Length: 386
Image (cartoon, rainbow, N blue to C red; front, top):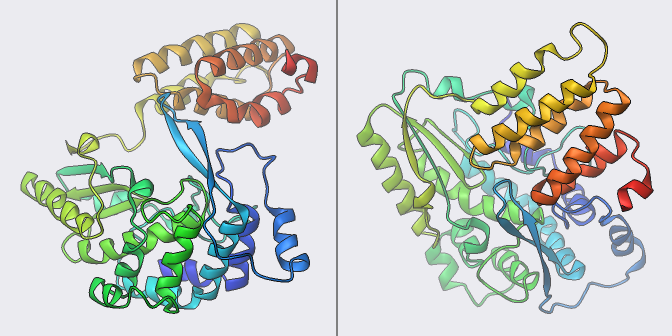
């Protein structure tokens, strides 16, 4: 099984730069028409000098979450973003050594979502990317014999990260504070250009650019290093923690210790989302099982899904949404599982109209309309416009 260091060291400095500039400027939640390809070509082949070292503004874009609450996505000014990418490329060797130090000795990779080389894309970061061959499935191993599970996350993680905390993690708080005015130090350069890309602000990283994942991992891997000395049965998905323990007291202690480590970097635990569960519990959401059970009969006795079947399926999905606190992920999952089935013309028309109608109620669904509805079912552009 690969280590965290293996994933990082596979990426060469120039590959890091190319991917971050070309594919890492825009969140995957933005429409795919946005790309940095031409800008990368300009930076490498046309622009003869570095962009000026000045504060760069950014654009806020509200992306709807699956619970119909918006998340602020940040779109950086390209020039400020490029300067940060160039700085990370320049010091990638030091960063790889840092990540090796902080993750060395882990029996499994604690951080499950991070930059890496991926199949079928030149991007080096995707929120929900999984490769079972490289990553394995650690949960069955770490909850074996455990009695309790803790689930918590960091309160407003990216917007709360203090850029000066990046040098604190890289070289230690005392060294960083004693050398805060020495701008030629590599760790201060990373801090500086993290600020540049966010209009000179020291508080907060933009949600969306892939650079934010690298910067946050610098701090969160340092926290993992300390936390894993006491707890060996937890994993982290960016800022989302799941830990398995033997007793309720251990569960309480994990929460206390995580909170203590977070505070060292001016971060706070999200107490509203902190839960302790008694095992066993379902690893996969119950509504996923219900959808999978529902589609078992699809195309079992004929090679297509007809109008009545798709109508019943949509009604079933809408009921599931209401049963799961208006979780729009239910509809998203349902639309995606239909991609491998053949629908009659009437069934296609009903599905298209139903999902478009639902997307007006649940804007979280809008980003999937292109690939999974309009392209999949060859919807006429006049109908899309209407």
